[in-house]
Image (cartoon, rainbow, N blue to C red; front, top):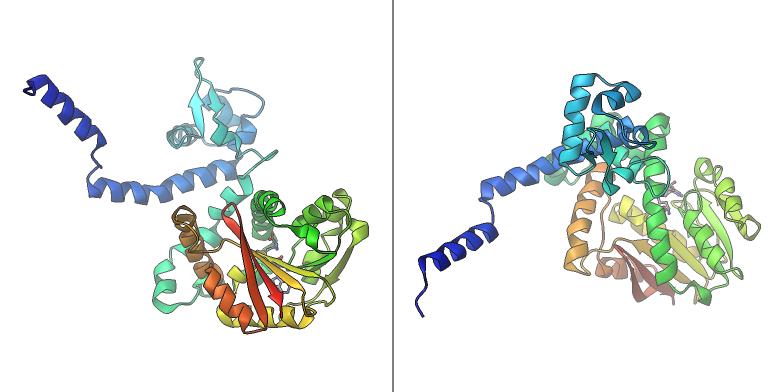
Length: 352
Ligand SMILES: C[S@@+](CC[C@H](N)C(=O)[O-])C[C@H]1O[C@@H](n2cnc3c(N)ncnc32)[C@H](O)[C@@H]1O
């Protein structure tokens, strides 16, 4: 059967539809990812979703409500629509899309994480990724006058956005972790670097027979009681403060440490592992909650970028299972399992 001219045109059209764009266009698109991120962060910072929460407004009305210069605001709303946060309704009013709604303050919000990634502390530091890759050192202190954790102490406004951003992420992580890991095997748990106790509270809520210890720095645990009381678990929690570089409270069956090791280089991580191992009795377990690298290609795409974020901010890193196995074995802990919990995993070890 001969191929007609019309068939050839159909084939040519469908091939050109499916062909990848030229590499220059693909590079341009990757680079514009930074601009798209800038629009999302600015949308969150300006509170556009909150401004539209009670119904459609015209661009001019929304500009007035948010106290923005009218012409640039209208241009910005078009940029917001181009990245899928807004759409224009029939009467010319603006409406939030589901993506835009996720940047409102209430509910299942990602607003503060968007604000944090757009903050000077984060964005300006990423501009020096090349320095970090050349030297292996974080450019944060050279740019902002101190390391990231000291900076947070000296800049309460940025710290508030950062802490709220971490809570938004934690909420998502916590749901998956309490489902994925079998905590019912343990009578007591110490959450090392447990922040304000959100993960510990979720574990104790699910397991009413367990008791817990929340261990973090003094200024952090001092703000934990509200969270623990609201969760109805405060009677089963002992709150203790100190530095995990000095020592960790002993006596629990399980030591949980979530998203702490990725903040530290191998030397500091060794010291934290050593102090936890000293606190563990023989047969006690440790559950390291982290986005572990090398487990699957899809997760690795995100984890490779998180790894760069850790590098630029604090010389930390995302680790593989083998890297955790090696750090654990140096202090007499045997790696006994890995449970996946979405992008995060729980790496379990047992003191031998
Ligand atoms: C990225 S946050 C993780 C918080 C919490 N575990 C979570 O998963 O959301 C790191 C935590 O380590 C704590 N931290 C940092 N240095 C510490 C130290 N020297 N001793 C104890 N905790 C520390 C911080 O206060 C913070 O709560």
